[in-house]
Image (cartoon, helix red, strand yellow):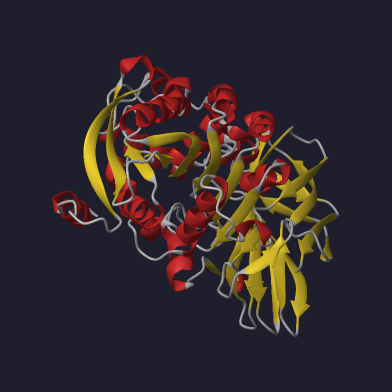
Length: 491
């Protein structure tokens, strides 16, 4: 990407009237006068404007070069002014990292103000887009600033606590990656410093209150009232911002909306598109903004809005709404297992496992015969002689009695072949509290679309340790499962 940027910056603006673009490195005053460093991409050969505006805040720990390739295409081919800027607290921008706090979100509006005054931008035609941290900022800014007509949020979060603390279980690998990247490339502010202190001290629950003002799910009413057109794109195996929070958020949007879920891990599905290379996700982003920022009648609003590509390969499947069709319900018999020991079943490694699934169709696997039944519950699911497509959110109704005050359970749903080799379809952690108390838990696994091969079957494994998460299971304790059930949705 550095080579691409140097090439773009070094290219002189054409003297002819042919459409093109020019890039400049600018300083933009953010909230409180904090300097934000930006690459401003402007169209050339299309007159003096004003031009529709797209604002793109950078991802966590990534500088403003991130979107230059995509921005150049959008400027040249569609006539947008695009401002790709480094989020406050990182790299060349000033200030401190406030974890998408009010100043960071307010910076989006300040950039809009600057572009209208200094870059021939049209304040009545504004969009916001980003990947990861930039995506979350775009959604939050859309709630606050009515000028933002459309947003495209890729690999985003909509509920920060639910992402990093699913079912009261710390996503340890995700938290460690974010903390390390933040300290290596930026200047943590008080909120991030205090959050890390709480995490290191085993008090992660104290971090949860910062989530609400930093989560678009809490601002859905404002987004709907503004009529913002929202496009969401995430990966099935996103190890930082899992897709369940995205599908729930999508269901609550009342304005124009589009959902695209595809194989991969955090930011992998749209990575090459940000660099300006051919990419299905970014192609849809461009069409989304053409329709809802420029007002072009390009037909995207007539397409079925839910676009899902199976996690283990296959063509995109289109739906009018989140799939909620036929289900298979599997009754699970009672079992008792010892807690605190790991098994060969786990959820894989964030960024790596999902990328292998997305790029090479290599799933996180397991050999079911080698799962120790003393420390894990294993249940056989339905067999599909002609194959089937799992599509939607598998759900568990789980009766459990832990002997320890706190136990962490990890549920894994596999496709299993005739030799007992399994491919991980989806999973979910859940923390159980209350020693000796029998309780029934409703657990939603992460949503998925997965093509089950002819003759293969499903299997459920539940154990009490997973390297991705911070487990609170106690060795020497037990978990007793009473009669339970698994519901599997099918397309």
